Image (cartoon, rainbow, N blue to C red):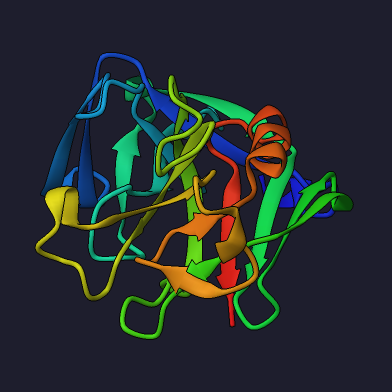
Length: 209
């Protein structure tokens, strides 16, 4: 998989039926995952590495886990997941409040965003898109759509599900370009529609200063 970096490819793994994540292949259980997560979306991991058997076939994958603390990873059996390539990636720069989508390492889409307020900052790190939802009421607080990512708030740990972070639309377009959220990345609804159509589950998301 490392040979795919220059081509702008990463990999995601979707759970087939159920999966167990271990600290090392088959050693010390970290967490169990069902095929469908608690929000009704197929469970997805970002693939970080692979261990192959003597026949060169994958036996274990090292994956990013969509659970706190941020940066959690583990090993899942290759038989428990289906792996697929992802050509897109997303970068968010908090200082400039800009989001860029790349495909095969080429910029494809740019947008201004709102980021976390000083008291509820957006967590910096490398994550991945683990959920995708089109929303029924575009006038609601999350706008037209939401892309859940594997990040969780560093300060809102008592929130439901540990304070998950998402990229989503908004009913407050005047907030775009400001530090105004509880940690999520807000886009204007028109931009969120475009982003939703470009970014599949498993897409890496880098949140930078």
